Image (cartoon, rainbow, N blue to C red; front, side):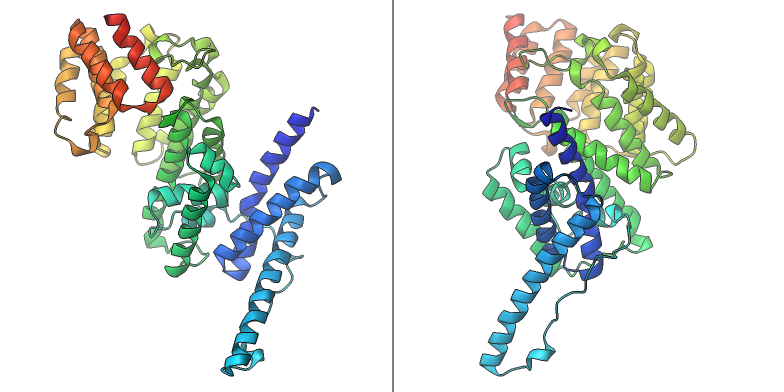
Length: 416
């Protein structure tokens, strides 16, 4: 095995063990912020020592032990400081203060991934903070890796994560699953956060690259973990299927120079047949036995695309019907945007443009480049090349993704 392969395998192992170690500490001590810092230090120690010394026989126990020692040292130092302050102020006797935590060598194995996800997606946090904290605490990514993925300075991301942990602490959140009556709503937040992580990886909102594989891989890994914990939840299964079916196209989405290839022009022999087979099987099974939800419907649409041998064989009437259902179950402007393309493929571009016009007054789409991009595509289908060129250029000005900008500018130039 090459050095790169060994390092990649080690990184994957640490990401898998990170939530387990954090869960073990947080379950016992309840101090999420301090436990998370201790686990990050243990992960750094493992990344430094294991390549030279070898992976220990019980890597999970190693991480828990090292993190516990770091946490113990921190609590002891804090206790000593408080004792000194108390003695100086003569307020309380030293024995009344916090004592160090017990040993964790015999910590039983328990999967705390779901509890961690609920905690990282606490309703007191903003969506950006939920994403950052999930990637750090559950995904095992370093602050630097998260900052790089979202194109912000490491110091900015560190502050965001620090504020998120402080917010959780001040909110009095405990390391327990939410009550049964809150769990469904909280699970929707967890799924949305994983969806955001995947989408940012699949089509980066800014920067020189169209895709960020580390984010899509992490989103799929976490979705798999969640599916193992909740195999009969329709939306959990739907989200995993959607990710697999969408990510299956990754290799065909760009040319060797990094330029974007639209769905209709992709070489489908490059699609990942294994991911498509798995995704289709997941969504076919779950649709037959659970209540319909938006992630299931999106996965069903992706499955129709995935099963078409070429663009011309796509079952667009079925896709239109699925979008009509999705618009009823979870209406939002992005659904309408995609629905307009499907409608244009079945009923003609004018019908698609009419549907698209319903978004012109939607404040959520004001300035969004995708509205102009879809409008340009439909005008081009209708033969109105001047209108198409204008819309392509408008979309190019508005996007912050360099590959998308180059693609849109190229379409406009071709029509000129």
